[in-house]
Image 1 (cartoon, helix red, strand yellow):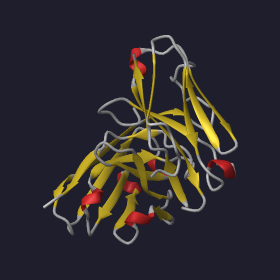
Image 2 (cartoon, rainbow over the protein chains, first blue to last red):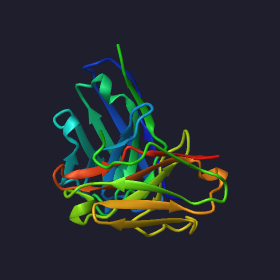
Image 3 (cartoon, helix red, strand yellow):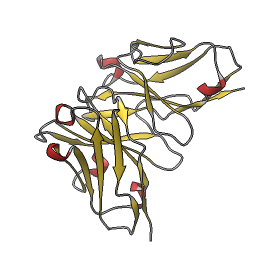
Image 4 (cartoon, chains in turn orange, blue):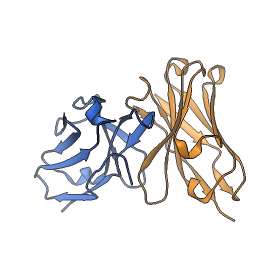
Length: 119
Length: 111
């Protein structure tokens, strides 16, 4: 079964850091671009970042550039999102998604992990 | 303010047909980039519903269809069922922003 499982969310103070993980199974992880998408409480979806199969290309939405870093470990079938200098507006459910054709559709989604930035 | 504009809500009775619009600009839909649609029932993760403007992934009923023209796209749902009640999002690529963009979402209520 094709599956993505996120972890690492939690409550963090403004200015703090958090590292999200996404474990992939059921497909060839190393052959796919991967993305992070977030959804603030009661709001719509926002694409956050994506990464090429070998990690050599990475793209970010402007609001997280310089604060968030996307990475992957193909040997562990895992995707990561390192989030630094967190702000209240980063509070959201963060989804990991398979992005098979780069900036095209996202065809497999995890259930999400919740990040809350609050003092 | 989302880059792609959708109506906040639509509704219809069981069996009826509804459409959801997605309006973009010359840097996304109007530039020729394809549109994709996602369905998100309450409390669940998004699910790919339509890709490449009008293609359905395996398992998606043919009651769902998509189209694109100019700077806009539409999702049509025929034979409305209670289980169709969900939020629906369009998505495309924006060359000015160099990233994927979503519509603000449309809440479908089945009366």
